[in-house]
Amino acid sequence: MPDGGQWDSALFQGTAAYYERGRLPYAPGFAGTLVTALGLDGRGRILDVGCGPGTALLALARYVTEAVGIDPDADMVAEAERQAERRGVTNARWAAVCAEDLPAGLGEFRAVVFAKSFHWTDRERVAATVREMLEPGGAFVHISDLDVPPDAPTPLPWPAPPYDRIGDLVRRYLGPVRRAGRGVLVNGTPDREDLVLARAGFVHCERHVVAAGGVADRTTDDMVAWVFSRSNCAPHLFGDRLPDFERDLRAVLRQAAPGNRFAERLPATGIMIWRKPER
Image 1 (cartoon, rainbow, N blue to C red):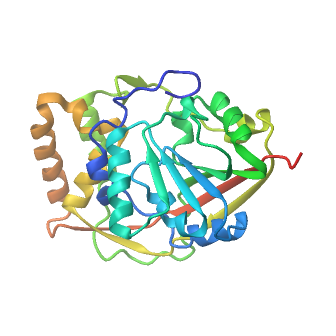
Image 2 (image 1 turned 90 degrees about the horizontal axis):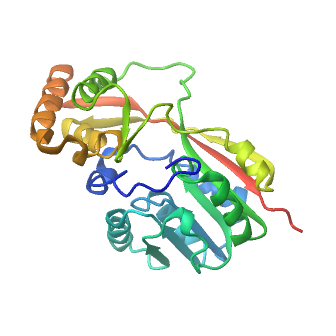
């Protein structure tokens, strides 16, 4: 758990099967932006910590000699292996490893990527370890979604997902405080990665915003998958009330979009890059 806690193996329990369908993609140009920023030229190695089903790493694998993905959830690792096979990616390998167990004999890397995962780690400890795993001048990469409104938004072709009503329903079943594995997150997840990485000895922060510029067409099943892909409403949290919750969730979605189609603007992708000093 964040900043000093012990990893909770129940945090994303049961979510792997829903991740690929439920989560919105990164902006289409995020991989090209990273390739240019990091100078990836088909050589070297990259590591994705908290790789999930391999979403970020599989987009970058062809630009390096070897891509390594680790995740503490064995189901996520298995899903990443399936996605790699489906896409014909042969230079990636995967392991069920916690960030706190690094370096785990994995060797040296040109870049280490955290795609929406750093906040789930013991950040001070992990940042210091990752610095030692990077080659001189190597990069610590932080990837996140950014809510950047378009300059001149056009009307959506279908109703937007009723996120507020979904949140109300989750709280009705699971309580007012956000659930997280076997515990709760009273104050949410931590931020200010810049301070953590500065204390770990990283320098020269570089920021990129990659616009998505598109609209995602989503179905009711896509939205159900989105809900069950999240740590705060992972299927196991509902226990024997899971069928009741899904029934009520589908009723909320059906009321919001009788035609079974939703639309939402894809979020921009934020990329922050810090460097290990050359010496």
